[in-house]
Amino acid sequence: MGLFYCAGYPPLEMLKLLNSINFFEVLSFTLPKMGFLSLKKAEGFLRKLLKVHSFKDLKRGLFICALDIKRGRTYYFNEGDPVKLVLGSCALPGVFEPVKYKEYLLVDGGVTNNLPVEPFLGDELPVVGVDVNNSPFEERPKNLFQLLIRSFVLAGRESTNLRKRYCKLVLEPPVYNFPLFDLKSANKIYKIGYESAKRLLKTKGATL
View 1: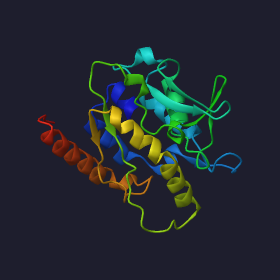
View 2: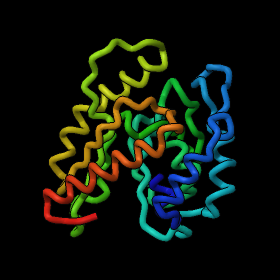
View 3: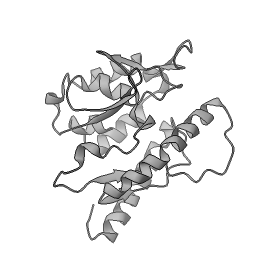
View 4: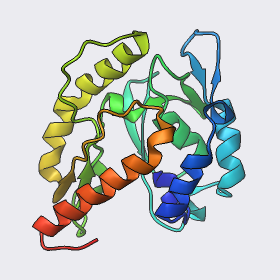
């Protein structure tokens, strides 16, 4: 969503797009060598909608956090191919295949940093963090996929909480009951996030 926003898409247009997406239109199953799902179809989908080839084509500044699994180093990219990089930044290990980009082999940056405030430290503007993984887990995972997702969330929770101290505002919308790929609930999730943001800003004397 960050890439779409910085490319000029307004929020309601992004929501409309989400409601029109078919899961198999953007993702495909692959032989589980390094992941169960491939992002190759997603790349074609993004390039069709986003006519951007570099960060210079974006209308707003953007940093993309991704982990190079080869070197074990987290990067905050603000140059290069934003489509390829954003795909790498959401390649959840074990679920999606890593994304090859130049000399990097990229996976979800949330493995090491799920609240990447670093590019904004020292900036004059206030930092606003969003945490959608603040789930109070109570039930056991029901399958391998749920186990992978929960392990990923729990692994990054401590580092996320530590980084919240650098945020002026932290939004924690209660959306943890929605499955990761629940596109059918996009309208409900949008409304929950919007109303949560309004309440948070109201307590801080701001408006939305």
